[in-house]
Length: 299
Image 1: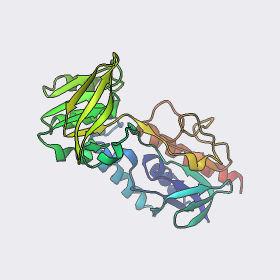
Image 2: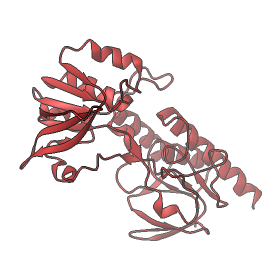
Image 3: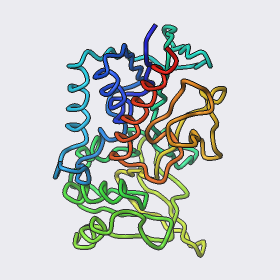
Image 4: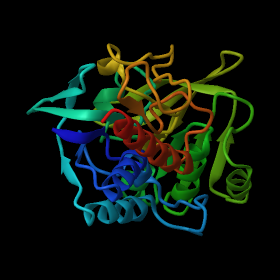
């Protein structure tokens, strides 16, 4: 029996563990893949208070080591079911807790084109900082208009010979400062009001077909496509114990409580205005604090 089981080892989950362990609670963190969540792929984090600049990998690793020193127990298992009585079933074991914090974050959204999956690792990537170095001196494309897309394009502009930045709207949603930096790059070309409708190639990606708002089509030869069109949660396995909105995010009246007593939510996986590193760690600290207070009331 654990005091708190935390599902997810991203910034929200690890921060929850940090607060719970400092309160001397018995904590288990369950993670399906690797610690760090999406932030681990960010080349630079420059909007976190008091840290001028740090790589996402370094931030995540520092947080992980900090919590590990407090005695965090972490198991790399995939959660497949959660019951109202706080029984958590994974692909390997079953665990029981007095409280559960869901901090599963979100995953890269796909274009959902027919052969997209076939080209992953063969010209299609969802992580510029992971795979960008393979395309030094090549022609690449970034698809998206948020902060991740802009940062990816900026990073790739220092590696690739040519960078196309394609966005379906007429202006970017991301940070204006980054957008202005991109405008100064001579090897970056903006393509607005356009969607990628086809991925072309045989054994690897060779070109993409785009279509603008007037239905004009155009083929662009590229060596790699970096897709950065946002995130989406995977909360279906929790639908028996939480309310999920039409976009798949977990609903909570106050940002912490779900509809089931003793089951809490934190981070990007919940309905919220802003999905950033700062709000993830805030959610994690609040979720753990509330869970601990409510456990004391129920003693």
